[in-house]
Length: 212
Length: 138
Picture 1 (tube, each protein chain N blue to C red):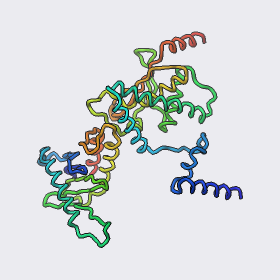
Picture 2: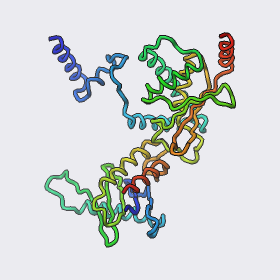
Picture 3: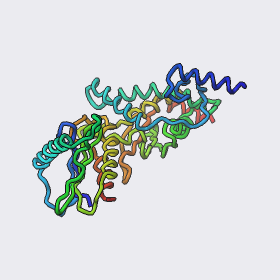
């Protein structure tokens, strides 16, 4: 009895908005935040949107560095929201404030939430001890982008580096994050996200390590 | 064996031209452009003079294959007016499946790249690489 009432309500909702759309999309704002099943966005749809984002920013900047900075800013706005959402959905009680734990969190939880797979590797640079690198062998959102030879130093992964930079700032470990394309045999779109942590973060880490 | 592939945009300009068979005579870039324009013209003619049915909506698809003694030319026109042309040997009777796959690759690596301007020549390494793979499979 109650379920048929519910069904009638749902049908009425659908008729009011658009009979062709699925139930999920019409009641988008009434969906619970903790999603029950893995729902994905079409990669093609996002690829078109992302391509248009890059074209849009390209018209408003002068230079490759500026373009990467603008994409980084766009990514930061996504990063803040992704951070809140993943913390809520994974039911994590503590926010990571130590550098290494935060990097592991980004590597596994955030990457899985965004790209459906953990990042491929996490390394610490041997030259500078405040630099860390997250590698993704084939970032799905960059799959269809071919950068022309005149802009060979441009890395569209600047969007992903913006997401990481926002999460680092949320975890109280502010860093300068950039993305570089480092192709390796068979992986032409291999992207490396380089995080350079601020001086006070590294000093704080040293103090905490010594204090232990 | 696919000898070469051409892609012609809506206005008849050549946007992609690749030769996959090194043993045959190559077309110069000028000749390729002339070929594209000519083919665009005769394709339009063929779809106009085709005897259509009573209903107004049925439009002819235009030229699908051209047979000669040594090779066969296949053409696939998309609803957006882009023509995918492949020149193959006589063993391939129907290349629509392959041409549809080429259309998919074009949609993926050309249309989704922010650096590609519509109706311009396709300059994408990934498109070239995937095309080579597809042609080698056939």
